[in-house]
Image 1 (cartoon, rainbow, N blue to C red):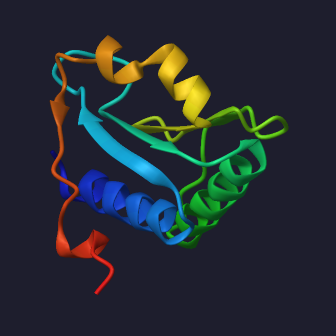
Image 2 (image 1 turned 30 degrees about the vertical axis):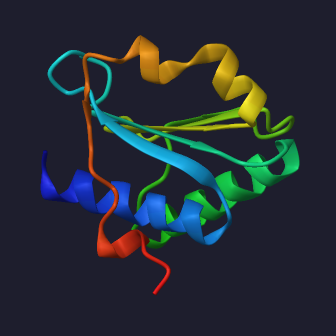
Image 3 (image 1 turned 90 degrees about the vertical axis):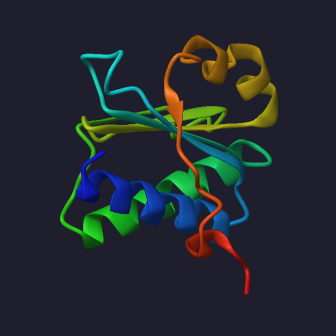
Length: 122
């Protein structure tokens, strides 16, 4: 996985974590998908929380000069998609994440280890 992609995954994961998002998971699908290299999945508590996390993620990425090619779902917040082409961020309410189970859809991908010092609270 290229360093820029991995640093974006860590940046976004940290932003989600800092804003009380949970169940953060990144899946490298570069070997099995022609549409993107990586998916990042996470939960917010309710729709408003999911939308707020999405805004924070966009702000962090804009600070790096990266804007999404497409954004979907901000208004309702049950499932927000931030498409950065090389990385697609899916932010869900717990009910929507359970319903669609993208982890199972992309089970052939490689789950990235995000339990790095970047995500510890200390």
